[in-house]
Image 1 (cartoon, rainbow, N blue to C red):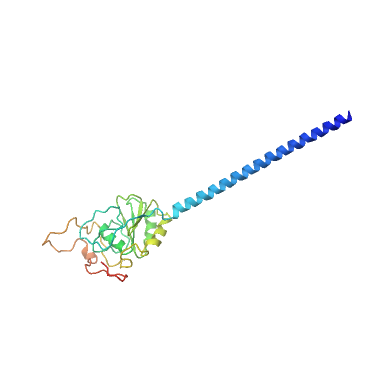
Image 2 (cartoon, rainbow, N blue to C red; image 1 turned 90 degrees about the vertical axis):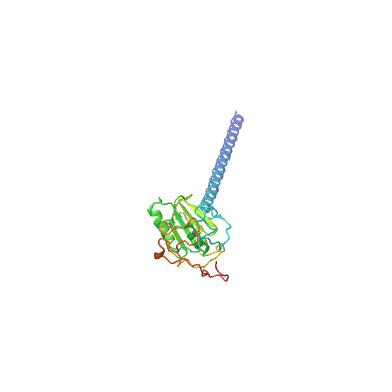
Amino acid sequence: MSKDKTQARREHLARMRAEQKRKERRTAFLMWGIGGAVVVLLVGAVAFYMVNVRATTSLDAVTTAAYPGAQHVETKVTYKENPPMGGEHNPAWQTCAVYDQPINNENAVHSLEHGAVWITYRPDLPKDQVDKLKELASRDYMLMSPYPGLPAKIVLSSWNRQLKVDSADDPRLPKYIAKYRNSGDQAPELGSSCSGGVNTTTAEAPIPAAAPSPGASDAPSPGASDSPKPSTSPEPSASPSPSS
């Protein structure tokens, strides 16, 4: 009888030990599973953060073109992009400043050729957003004006480069300006003056759709008395080659 009891105790202890080991294995598996899930979540969170940071701060969304410079025309130009970022343009550049009314594409494009960045925005953009854009534009080689019919709320343009955003708080705006404002090698006449040009708006001095006929009056266009006369002499340029 004593032997049976001893054997029963041994079997009971063996069962208890086996059950304990099973519990330990289940606990270990559970801990490993939780740990693995935490690692996966952390990796996913870091990856999402990196992707989100890159999407909101990189300039990968900048579109490009390949327009040559020095293409002067006296008439209105139909541009492929809206707003334009290069191509034919008026001989007079737009004086770099902040304008509260639309300006002529043809004058603004000439400023881009000199290395300017042009901030355009939809006329219905909230005032607080416009004020933030004005802060960004308060330096040399910066143009800013409202632009009806924009494909985005805000568009930044420089020669052969363009970025579309939907908020003045977008962190890509200052990065774009730092990279393309009177810098880089994309502007054909980089460093040429962005002052001393015309400072009239489209309403004040629209670009004619066709060249004036022979014998037409040479009277100044509306607003010409308030702005420098467009020069037809070679433009000042910081580059060794003559400006066109």
